[in-house]
Length: 78
Image (tube, rainbow, N blue to C red):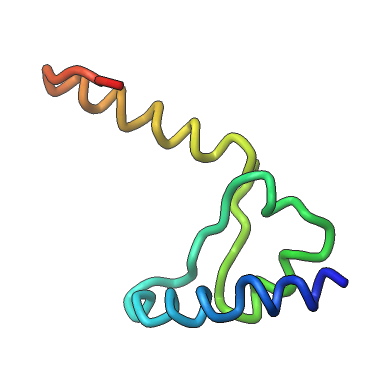
C-alpha cells in the first residue's frame, strides 16, 4: 500500500525536483513522514536521502540560521 501511495503522491514532484539537482549529490528529506517504514528505499530510487534525525532536522536548521543572524547583528523575527 505504501508503494502505491508513494507513486501517486510523490513520484511526479520528485521527478520535477530532480531537474534542480544537477549539481547536488542527493536531495535531503526531513520531517516525520521521512520515518514511515519502507519510505527510504522508495526515495533512494529518485536520489533522495533521509537525513539523520528527520523529525528535528528542520528545527535544528532554523536554530542555526537564527544564531547566524544574531551573530551578524541582525535579529530573528517571527
